[in-house]
Length: 334
Length: 211
Image 1 (cartoon, rainbow over the protein chains, first blue to last red):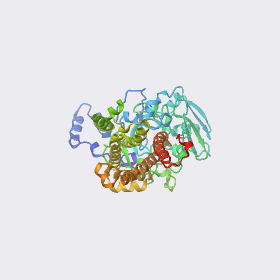
Image 2: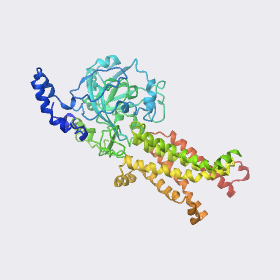
Image 3: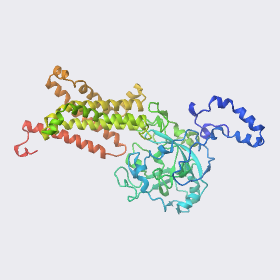
């Protein structure tokens, strides 16, 4: 795929990321050299591949078990933006079961027990099932997906996840005709999660999607990041990633996936309905009641005095998911 | 008394000055050596706010401590602590204006109107400014002690606004534990003054004199 458009998830890079002029002007020399070589034909076709994909976008941190994954063919699944440092992505987290400060989860989440782990799929489905984590891992081919992550608080990252489309699982359990929403229930074990029971939220943390949102190929059931299994603070051993919605919609450490008829009452919606709607799509035109959502700070990239970058509609995934909301008043259904 | 002699030592003020600058030096050092975590801007905005509140508690604790412990010399540190409240408040405002708003005055003006907690914080800063500006001896002489004291009573309103600012900021996460700690400290310091004032006025019957 040579030509990148917003349809394939291409957001124009900043000037510093564009290939330097000298390198660019030398590209024909390189090609000529290759074409003249013994393995010329093979090398030339290799060279024609996506130039930006040549350099690995990130390095495996070497901290946890490797989780190998193939490239994803899902449209929009591979942003070419600079990947956030693993250190930032794994130490700056919102996971209130381990404390409300963003440095708390990395400090406290070591107590989370991720084996054995099961995920129950229940409710309005033909084939309810209880999946052991090992079965879930093998249910479909693991793919690498590099997504933008936009937090409702006004910061963002770029994370290389490992997982597969949630739709793979949904197809297997065969939702019934009256299943219209999917509810995601996350782990709430006061013995291993010190802040479960604090008055901040109702426990367990529950999130939800409309069935068509859950079926969208970008909606990811994720088991890893940066080529390794998920660190506990990022929602090990299995979590959801919905890249066009604010981060809190992507539940961590899932234990139940329930198919229901009515819109689920979600954790933040219960805590502050006027601030956190059910949809919570990233939308620069609908402000949070207490702050603007028009801009964001990219963690680890934008310097202290850099102007914050503009937030994109549906976090830049409008081409892929815009049609899910055709005709909907997004100001009302925020 | 040894404690009083130590507090009267010329170096005592200098020591306090250096101690009060330590948080600022740490922030500066942390920012330059990238030790402030993934979001240094957020860290600096919050840390400068925290230290403003802490110095506000400290400066308001001087008089109760002085009276309750019978250590009149404590009074000589009050002005410096008060000016450090303003110092950290200025840093807090600068961090917010610079890191969050890129010093865009129009954006800041819009934000003050849009977000009540910013308005409250900004009002507290405005109220604090004349107090810092009249902290030197000549200002007291020019204003006259009575008027100067009346003006500086504004610190109570500032404390209330500061707590409201912090409360509103934390309301999003329903996370009020820290807010409560500061509210209790400032409440106790103001309550102590209120009770003393009432007692002086004779509003309390003698049987309540123990208060």
